[in-house]
Length: 419
View 1: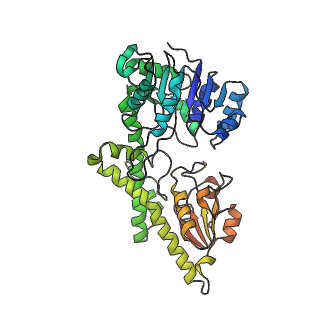
View 2: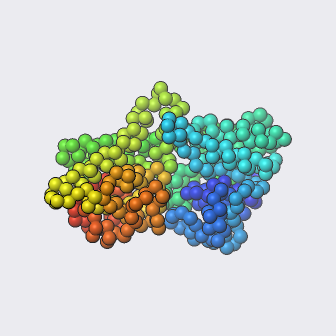
View 3: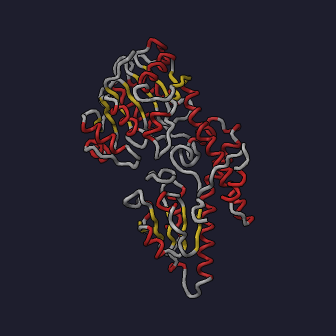
């Protein structure tokens, strides 16, 4: 059994850093690699650059004990975990695995015989094999599973993360892991690695099935959210409260409709279905349709905001649009986190900032400043938004908003908090 004295995690974002911290909490020496100098400096100081419950304490303790450090360039290790972004190309929604390629080529010079390389990034089918090919190109002096099978110098596997933002530190430990090696020996080695901290079951399959399993999980959720979002639009046209309707329908013992929202965000559910569509475009009608429903929901929300602005103007004669203040509540892609990736709330506020001539305020308790894309948007607290806003738009049901009374003025509530 391979002994993993030193583990390297490539990419210290929302998955990479918690994973690195978990290994370090078990006494492993962990070297985190990131291309952002500010991220590296922050972690080496014992602090964190993202919002995730309990992560700050684990990182601080691991750095203080000397178990966790960060660097800009890869260093030798026994195992390498690649946890870098895998976006899609905006024009055609094709997967962009350039970050995986860059990470693979970056670690190649420090690989040694006996090393394990695990791709954790959510990936299109075939990405793990492609990564192995890039590594082989860079290191012809080593043998890899695609050529040498079980006798290869380097072991390669895919193990996608399956955690919920806001509960990452718990679910990394308790959730089952799907592990797909390029050979059975690769799978066994990866299982040994994850059993250092994973209490859930390590379920073994091949790399391609592991890749598609993660995409399938998120596509399933996307389809179900699309049903709820489409239902909310239908209810709005019929004058029916969608949240009451869903509550009634869910009383059926075999019905469990999800809650609608302003769209779908995050780096997984908003992206992964397109990877399946790209791999089989002629057979993914439902998956594509669900993605299109969820992608269009922010446009419907914007139309509801415009209607609210028009109503305010109609009932306040003598004022112009540039005198109407829109207050938006929430920017993150889901409640109680700071992650803005693929956030429909962020997209809606961006469009308001570009098109509304009046003031746009935003309340987001999990960030300290608005991103550069929101030029002209003012980050304010809840009290200021309530006092200054004419139209109030609830986009994310953060805990700070769930207990607040409905503001005075025109309301667009996409989460059913004020309904």
